[in-house]
Image (cartoon, rainbow, N blue to C red; front, side, top):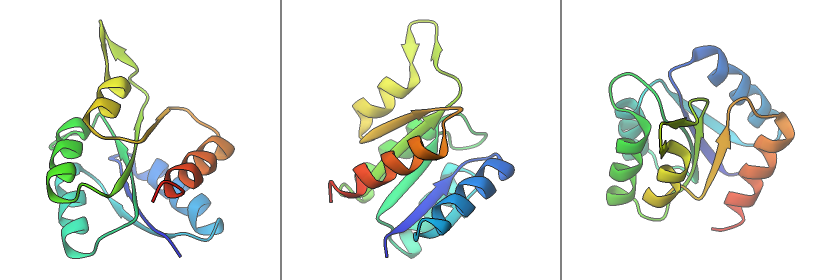
Length: 123
């Protein structure tokens, strides 16, 4: 069973993602920000991280950089509802920093599961 970590400050979104992913047969843990997520991965490695970009405290792009330094092989899916800020496309930047895939919020259950299956197949 693959282990996943959801890092997102939105508790209701984390809850929905957790339920969907557990029903699909994945072991799921949660963190409410990048710092908590980094601590979680340090204590117990995971196969895949679903990571929001815009969060208070340690935001997603910084978290991707730190994850890549500490664990270059972990798979990452970056998520954002923010899209782009002017000419700065956050999901494109997340890919440049090491996210294997991105999901623009809102996304469907099918899009989520397809992204997770696809990214896990890369390991």
